[in-house]
Length: 76
Image 1 (cartoon, rainbow, N blue to C red):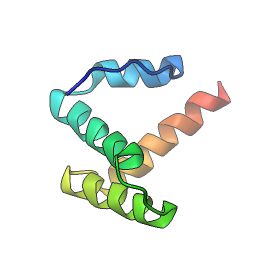
Image 2 (cartoon, rainbow, N blue to C red):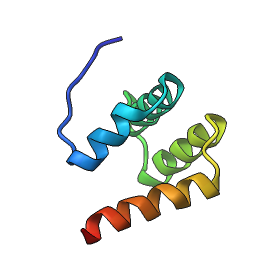
Image 3 (cartoon, rainbow, N blue to C red):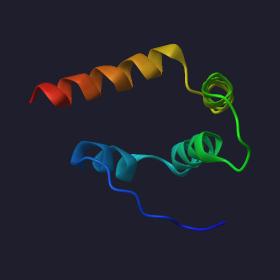
Image 4 (cartoon, one colour):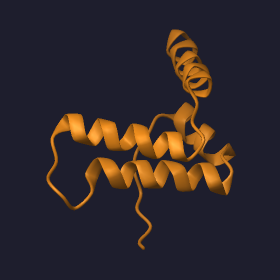
C-alpha cells in the first residue's frame, strides 16, 4: 500500500480529518474501486462502488446526510 495526496475542498478535508479509521478505510476502498487496475465501464464502477459502500456500512440515510451537508456548505 502507498499513501497519496489529493487536493480537495477545505470542508471535505475537515470531514476526512474527523473520520474514524474504519471510515477512512472505506473511502480508500471506494477510491480503489473507482481508479483500480482493471478497465471497467462507468456502470460497473458505480455498481462496485455502491456495493463496497454498502458492505462498509453506508446506508441511504447516511448518504443523504452527507449530501445535505455538502449542499449546505456550497450555499455558504
